[in-house]
Image (cartoon, rainbow, N blue to C red; front, side, top):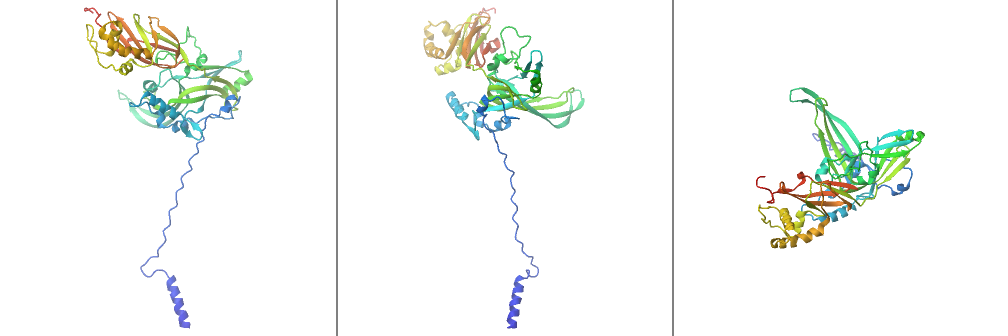
Length: 455
């Protein structure tokens, strides 16, 4: 009995003993701790609350929509330009579909948005008890003008951040060295097409004479004026209003919706700064501008965009003996629609362009050789003609021109200069647009056989 107990105890001890000589005890592997990803910040972007449109006060410290977030949510399908193999109808249908795109929560691409701007310039006239508030307006960014937007678009900067990102030693052509500071800026712009809707609030200038030329469709002809708003306020209220003045822009996005331009300023010896500005923009139209107190939310003034559907077009050109057609389609496209592709040789000099063929055909409509050509082309020209103009040096004004994209097809015949032809695209976007035709705008200049041999 004692022996059996001893054997049993020995067996148990052996079973519980560590592994025998030369062997290490096996340790169960410990599973690595799972890394917990930081929580994704919740995006609370929503459309502008239209119930506030009737309110006289905004919530305290109201900030509106986040520019960066809205821009990041816009899909690439919205910003993609019309494709080479995409018809105009298909492009318009794509834009219509994109407008209903849900960005996040209840926010759609075509929803009303609200963006704020602080740091406005204001000046008080104590005698008149008027506080004048200025909202700076700029030209559309150069890259936009060169690519997809008409020059009639204007910009309002909302904010700009700047930071130093380093330094280096620069050297000029004469061997002089200097430390150059590298600076990066990020600017945020609203690019809006309805500048003419706020025409009555343009800042007045002592040089203003006659009609306002601030609505030219030319990029470099006339200055862009800031918006100036006058608030009737007693002195006790004006001081607080001036120090806390802010603007709210109620905005609706439109094609091409968003983008970025990069501008770099080279350093100079007298300004040793190498600056790069990343200009971010949202494109659309401003529905309303509100001036309010950013501290307590009091709304001083609501400016509603004037509903414009047409305007006045002033065509100024050196044309005296000729004519202009305002078309909703280019002559080149009209030729293509008409199935006209052959180039004929007529007159004393080979006329090597379809424009020239059209000019000669119109000038000699009774000639049998032009009958087939005119039968194909004239109906389509008439179909796409919006206005016919016979201008002189003083220009021709057209009233009630619907806003939209147009082409000016013009002909000027001169016995010494030959014939010049314009097929110029422009966009009617403002209450008062001006198209000025110059020799530089002419797409073709040729001798139609009337020039004297000694010239």
